[in-house]
Amino acid sequence: MKRSLIVAMSFAVACAPAFAGELFNVGGLGKGTSQSFVVMEFINMRPSLTITTYQSFDSVDPKSSFNGMTGQCWGVIEIKVPSASGRGHCEFTDKSGDKNHNTWVATGLAKDGALQGSWTVIGGTGKYQNATGGGKFLSLTDRKAGTFENKVEGALFLK
Image 1: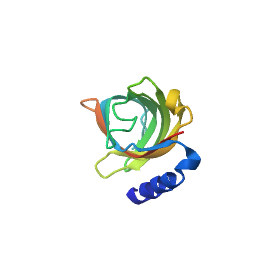
Image 2: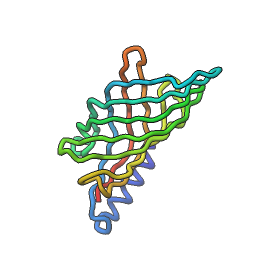
Image 3: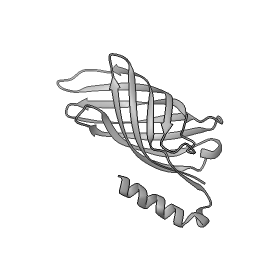
Image 4: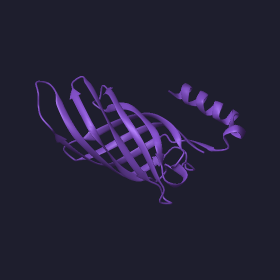
């Protein structure tokens, strides 16, 4: 992932005059609360509606507009250990009040039980209206405490 992110960022920097925008590393750690509602139970399978509320996001790049964002993600996850699938949407608000809209796709479970997958920017308001980008995530939820930590890798390009 690091190599592909570096290649993508290098390409965007090399083409910067043509794009006339800003590229940010939005990798970091999001923390907040999580609620899951099991829709029904089958043998070894649990489709669930999930809602996560980000109370903080600490980006590795302090200049990234993702730094300090708050917001919510919602979607449906189907867990059939040792695999998982699902998809959903997120809406984040940055410190200036602009909204960033993303989609996410769950692709599996890590060895520690964390949900893993990818995310893609689909637009938003203000500076995010024509934004592009995406990356990967690894989200570990403590269901008893109702909290989560989401490790994010990726890039955001503001046009």
